[in-house]
View 1 (cartoon, rainbow, N blue to C red):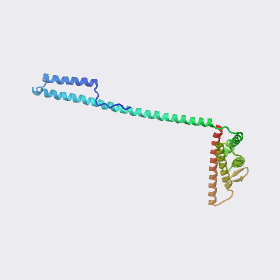
View 2 (cartoon, rainbow, N blue to C red):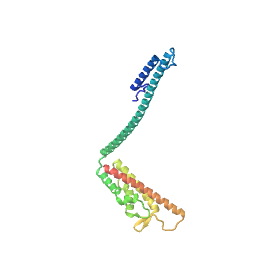
View 3 (cartoon, rainbow, N blue to C red):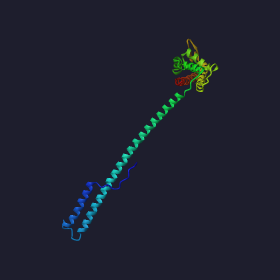
View 4 (cartoon, helix red, strand yellow):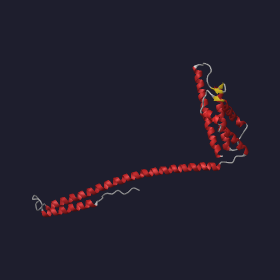
Length: 243
């Protein structure tokens, strides 16, 4: 809460000095130091000195009050900044606690799968955790695509024709993985061909510039589809870990 602004502050030393000056102003007219001071002008001199002393004391008091008010304002600004930092920290901690609570709640609310759904979940996890498949998709090299991951993607794309899930979340993952695999397979067959023990998108003959650019574009699209399938496989790993 902001502190009230002070108008005047009288310091002890300042009051003592003002009192001594006032006393001196009273004594000087009495002893009439200085021949130029006439008898009639004694009290005029006293009044002038006394007024100056009082004015100086009040000016000094006002200056002290302004100085203290500025210092108080600066202290309040610093304290306000510290409070803002503390509040931001509390908000971050509350957000982290809320995220942790939500994660825990999701884990606690994860449904128990029936035998058929559990078998399907295990089968999907076999695809999602296959190191060759994940490496082929995540570190895509179009001129040397292993045959085994291509076969696994074919199986994953055709899986919904023979398997279905009763659990809604599992069925959502099955559909997402199958659709991503089907997209990759479609783009793969447009541009890739067998090359020894691997598949490759490399052009084997000299072609026109237009055909070369078309091949490069389709290769990039195949890589993008692979990255999308890679992300969905990793997302399924997280879901499977929550079961």
